[in-house]
Structures are given as structure tokens and as C-alpha cells.
Length: 347
Image (cartoon, rainbow, N blue to C red; front, side, top):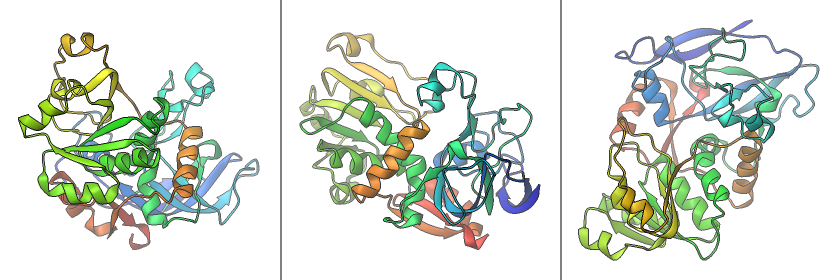
């Protein structure tokens, strides 16, 4: 094993700080990656502060990784030294359950291995994420990254990009569909970009009037303040799809009423407590309330290729590693447009 530099949280109420961890030597099927950029996801904060429970300290967050291949194992055929690659939210799965065979490793029936704070498939080794100088990943979970786009801006595609692309693709969003996006943050800004690129008529639903200018610049065709009851009433029975990216507690029923018959509302955010849903809002209109979790490796590669072809990447603020605790606080107050990305050369 080789020792690499990292940043870790040691307790829920302590800031992240420098840490050293051992990465395994690349096996026959492994790819070693020097990390260039690592995106900062809200999930990193939840995990570092044990807000979802189950954090195994010390924890090294980071699952939006772009870097260069530095070594490959003897059986690796997909990648070579010098290739630009990415790693997303998980780094392994059982490989043999129905979902894995169907290229939906994110729903592995035996439990996939997340990029950090997760047990490897040996059920013993704990994974450490992208807030580190290097990572070693089996080749089947490494993704090819085009050099057409700025690499720092590509990093958030490995979570925010695929999290929004997957449901839009799964439910067949296309020209003629009316799509609403709830919440203009890291996920929301990607949902607007991708949905509009697919030809949909996109409406941004927000509680913040100052976000209208940004929403329009990102590709939204309309903007509506959800705090205005008249707006919500006028939008009833309007949308084919609603992409809900909000992780704070909010009333799903208000948005379900905006769906047309057979409309679908997709939950991407994870509020801290369960929400009540009126059966009436679902039954009268045959509406669907569903959830979606990132995407499989095949679909994530498809998303990266799609974004390169359509010149889509995240709007970011590049920071140094020692600014991570400030970035966490600013993320919580919404003071970022729209994703922090760490320049890992600064570690």
C-alpha cells in the first residue's frame, strides 16, 4: 500500500483537516488515479457531520472525481497511463445480481460500495473518497472523460450531472414536454441545463426571486415564485414532469398539484424527516411520485459523452483544499453558484 495525502473529518462536530491514508497497490484489474479535481456535494456535508447516521470516522468525503491515470494493472484494457478519467458515487458492486447485470449498479441488491464511508465488497475495508491526492479503483467503475470541457467543471457531472440526467432519460423527456425544476442549486442548475438541451420547455420553481436571472441564463424558459399563491394556482395541471432537487423539508402536495394527468414528480433531494403525501393528489390525475438515485456506470458514461457533445458542464467556484470548511458553511447557506470544486493540486 502507498500513503497519500487527504482531508478527513474525525468527529461530527469537528472541521475537516489534513489526514494520511493508505491506498492499496493496484491489482490486476485496478486503475490508479491522480486526482486533479474533486467536487463538493451536499452529501459530503451530511456524511461528515453524521446527519444521516452511520458515518465511520475518520471519513474522507468526495465522489465527484476527475483525474489522470498514473498506473494500471496487468489485466486493464480500458485505460492507459495518462488517460483523463472520472470516478462517481460508487466504486464497486456485487456484479451478479439482477440490477448489476442490467447495468444498474446503483441499485445493487447486495449493496454497492460507495466511494467513501462504505464497506468494500470484502465487507471489511472502508472506502475513502476524493478529498485525497490519489485513488485506486477497479477498471469497471472508472469512466472516460473527454478533454472537450474544462475538467474542473466536469467533476460535478459525476454526481449532480448523472443524478439529473438519469431520471430525465429514464422517463423519456423530449421536445414538447413541460418540465419544472424545484430548487436552483447544484442539482437544480444541472437539471435545467440538461432538460433544456433535450428540447423540453423548462420552468424554474423557486422561493428566491433573485434566482430568476440565473435560471434564464442556464436555459430555463420560465420562472415562477412558489411563495406566490396566485402563481401556484395558475400552474395547476401544467407539467409533464417535476424534478425536485430540494433536500430541506417542504410540502410535496403543493407541487403534485402542478402535474398534468399521468405526470411524474421525481425526488432527488433527501429531506431529514418523512413527508406526508395526500392520496387525493395522486389518485385524481393518476400522478406518480417517484425517486431516483444517480445512475449506473453505463448510463454515467453515456451522460459524460452527452455533455461533451452538447457542451454542458457545471457552473463552479474553484477552491483550495484548506478552504473546504468555509465551503461547507457557504453550501449550507446557498452561497455558491452552483458547485464548489477543489483543486487537488493544493492538497
